[in-house]
Length: 197
Image (cartoon, rainbow, N blue to C red; front, side, top):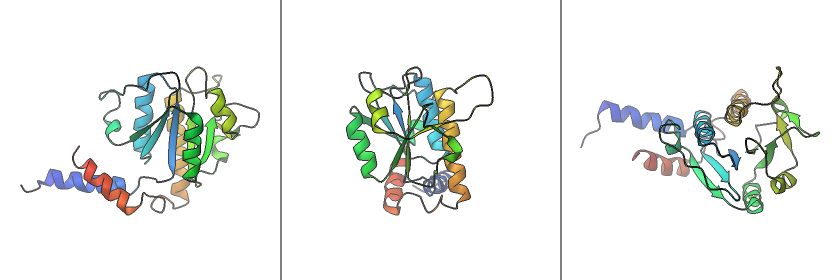
């Protein structure tokens, strides 16, 4: 069967998107329970070229991600599940990623001061209790989003979008988006997977 102009456009779109997926930028969602927040975070990951997101859920079920609320971003962002914080940290560090978490501790640095041109995994904590205690002890570095109003923090999904935009901005400014793209064989693998969706 011949491709139609619509399927040709879709194939080109998929190739174009895959060319910008970043191989060394990811998020970790730690016990984030609101499925709407999870879905919104997935949408931001897709928007800012993050191919994978890690879900660390300890003592809680993994979130159900609805098709409607995620605007189908769940199809384009791979979710990797973890139950053990130590194993996850070891795995991410083994991939050469610098781990940083969100928070307001005394050593926390403002978001723009973190160098996102480095391979980075950002850990987002639970909406109410933050990053779980054992993970907090394993990841010393911490960032916060400078706020100019009376409210001290943003909703976790909004914070994720702000953080990912800053990472995108820094990488774009440094001319690294293409350089940091997924390797060609991974792009090919995802292309054949995505074309079926």
